[in-house]
Length: 138
Length: 294
Image (cartoon, rainbow over all chains, first blue to last red; front, side):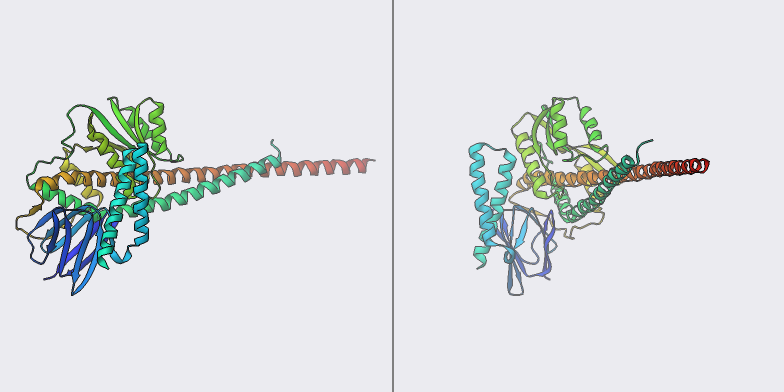
């Protein structure tokens, strides 16, 4: 029986497919491969790449920090942002990361409020995840 | 009786105002729809998060949500107000609710209206955030992160949110909700389920014991942050829908007032015109009479 995978963000379901052979998740303590019949699992995910295998063809997605729940061969990923690797604009991600890091330096110097720093950190983190995913995809 | 030109100018001005308020009414209606649609797309996320929380909670781990907050200290209150006015009594009602808070509290204002009120009444304003009309998770996440970080530094016993709950187009109510510490988790899950209409069970069937990675405690420790952010996002969307519907209703009333005013001014104008014609005819008749007499 194939696996079913859904990646859920606050903006809606970012990715969904009910016919997946295996999934690799960026769990907190290292990558986890999930095959059909996996024991029920709830894990913390780092920002990174989700690798999906479908009939010999591979689909990669970059995600932000989150959670994965695997029950009854249904994998649900809860994250604040997700993007398919083909849709990643490397240049935009690099720019976003550089801009966020630059602003971050600036913010730390000027002691801007924490919320702004947190927002920029999130931008930088997700941009990095996108770049890593894109780099490995090639 | 006012001059005809003066009345004509007033009619023109009132008509112009009516057109503007009518346009604002339409804009508010479309923005309200958008907030509601955004709430709809956040449904899957809310459902999964509620489900995860329940799964972890049933794992008999003590719900440590915000447990790190001390028993005594100041209350932290996040107020969702609006950036612009012209939305009826919405902000006034919100400020009434703030006035009722007598305890020592620190405030985070979202929207300039609340910031001004809090500063003016000499309350402790900690930070002010802006909220665009198209509320995104990113915006509310920044607010939530700031609140949690500040609370983490100590001296804060609760994090609460004061927002205008959307009931229907005509009714919105200021509501104060405690989001940390979460001692009423069941109530919260039930409220979210109702708000997002999550009555159907979405959890896949699997009765084997659940494994937690890296550990149930760590999974638990990270959940509250997601949870608080999701709650804030939900409340921000609700507050936005309230604002837009309040504005829509206020602008509808203003447009109707403008129409009524135009009607009465038109009547006045017609009367003045009739008067003028009558006077002219009288003068003509009087002139003709004089000629006949001569």
